[in-house]
Length: 321
Image (cartoon, rainbow, N blue to C red; front, side, top):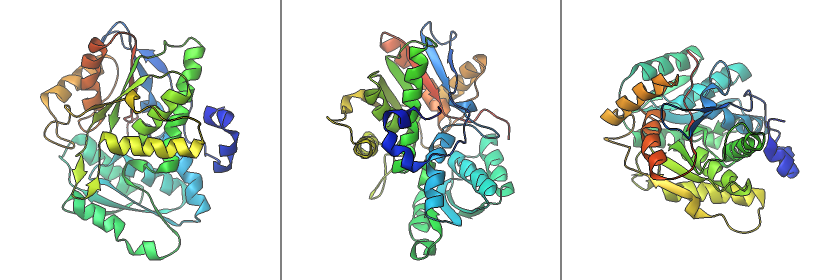
């Protein structure tokens, strides 16, 4: 069963997640990084496009259908991975897709993603800033009409977080099957924070109690808006915890926040990310400047600072567009 979360919480079957991924994704050793380093291959989670967004969209798509939406409205950077995943899903489902975008540094990945979104039929509404894109999304006239589904950046909303609670229970099954050791630390990129929040909840309810090392890749705040920080991640995790109706309290100390890999800003390459891309390539992995490269840069340092196995959760699509 691709959703062990439904085995644990059968009452959630009412959400009817849609199978978009090939699960479980593999867990493999990373001998070139450390003797006890591993990778969870969500980069090949689905075809034609992998990455972490598809796990979220498995839970979001039924929500779109329940809303009887004809148009999905989302936002992201110029080369948004979430926008690409959403536009491909909308193309498959016969839905319109509007994406409000804000500038990010140019790169081959950005250009490829943008072209792929356009080819999938997405309507791109370019704005000159993150604030402008956010206002375009928040003030969209479709909010006063029926048939519009508003999806936050990163394919993140409360139901999407459950996709990564489920993913952590999937990892627990793989550990029980002897496919990998139980990680003491798990390293993941944190952008819109739903992935890290889901892994945090899953870490506790699975009994693994793995420390979630979330690597910040976006600004902490945008004016009054909370964008990417530990407090937002914990808030999303608490919402998921309440959805599950779990007794007891979520342990916030399982979340370790790293803000020292952001560099000059969102999508900005640094010497650390350039080194990480080279190092990852030697392991047969593709990472980029915005998310996975910064998280992979953190992997070596984190694995050396703590005893026990360390797992890198790979969130970037590996399939050629």
